[in-house]
Amino acid sequence: MSENKLKVESLSAWFYEKQVLNQVSLDFPDKKVIAIIGPSGCGKTTFIRCLNRMHELTPGAKVKGRVVLDGKDIYTEMDAMEVRRKIGMVFQKPNPFPNMSIYDNVVAGLKLMGIRDKNLLDKVVESKLREVGLWDEVSDDLKRSGAQLSGGQQQRLCIARALATDPEVLLMDEPTSSLDPSSTAKIESLVRVLKNHATVIIITHNVQQAARVSDYTAFLYLGDLIEFGETKKVFESPKNPLTEKYVTGRFG
Amino acid sequence: MEPNMEIYVKKINSTLLEMTELIENIGDYVKAALEEKKGGLLPLTTEMCKAAQLKEEKVLEICVEALIRMQPFASDLRTLTTSMKVAYDISRICRYLRNIIEVMEEFNISECDVGDVLPLLKDARAMVTSSISSYINRDLKTAKDLIKADDSIDQRYRTILRKLATGEFNGTCILFNGLTARIIERMADHACYISYETIYLVTGNRVEY
Image (cartoon, rainbow over all chains, first blue to last red; front, side, top):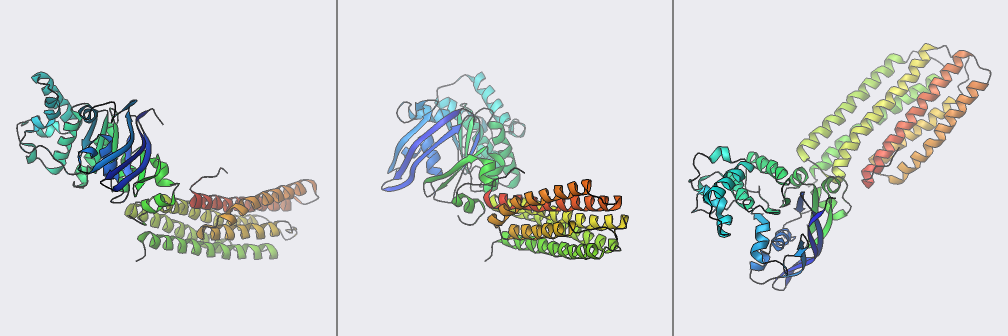
């Protein structure tokens, strides 16, 4: 396993009195794709929302434990904005800012950081749209609203927006669940490329997708981390009978 | 409702059992031919081996369809990959049995003593049947026992060779018994390969040959 980028130590999370994560400890290797799988309600989304301090934005939310990015605890040694700049997120449904152009969507994060240099912003827009394979499709009209793009294009735009701040970790919460097979294939290819620059943590309900795109897989069940290992091993010979049952479709 | 994967597993196992029946029948012919020291069974055993090969291809087709449709993981995935190997092993065992008939066609063995190869054949056939049965029943203990039993077959094969090399036999009988013992020893090896697949199927871990 390569050097660890992100370390999670005894992470527990609650919504009011209800505990949804139970002392999860996990090391995320640098520049790898890690899939988080598990049945609905097992705590996958809460888990990754804890990784960039989004969980704390929810009323009644509580977190205990440590999340360490490059040796710094993101809860005690970094401010939330810095965390979210370094740990980007792509959501289940494409959510481009509806009143913004394609161009403005990509640079929204940079502008929030106070960057106004037009040349720099132009370069970022082109490079990030190229990176997500969208440049050739939209470069003739960057002033068009992002909301006018197809679902697959919108999701790639959202990924470009997340990449604009050069995150070191990219969290993806079921990024293809609302996309057709062709758009899904493009996003999956993109995920494999993105790991050259960042650690990618992807939640998916589709175990076949986890097997296709990830280097490592973590299986969560009822808030517990049941198994974590190389994807080939988890899907060929899982150690835990619960993982076996889940990946063979016997429950969940 | 029965999970779809179980339907594929049933089809695969039923085809493997049909293959087993074929090699048991060929084995009976080979045993009788050795006891009576008579040839003439080559066309029949060739046809039976072709039938076994068709069934091997049927197992491959079922596995490929299951891979495409089910995209299986874990024990389901191991069931398919091991089934393809086991089907190949059974088909190969079939051809070994036919090879004994082929060797008999080459030599006049009426004067040969086949008293050493006949019990070796009996035990190797029992290993084959048991290995397939343990695969289908996911019987780990029997699979492990069979791998140990193969050492005894190897030892007896070497004993036969030494006896042939040092005893006073005619050239035809030396060749016939030596070749036949070698073929039977290889049959037992394939029974072992099936047992290795059983171990991988059940435990998820590969054991080195």
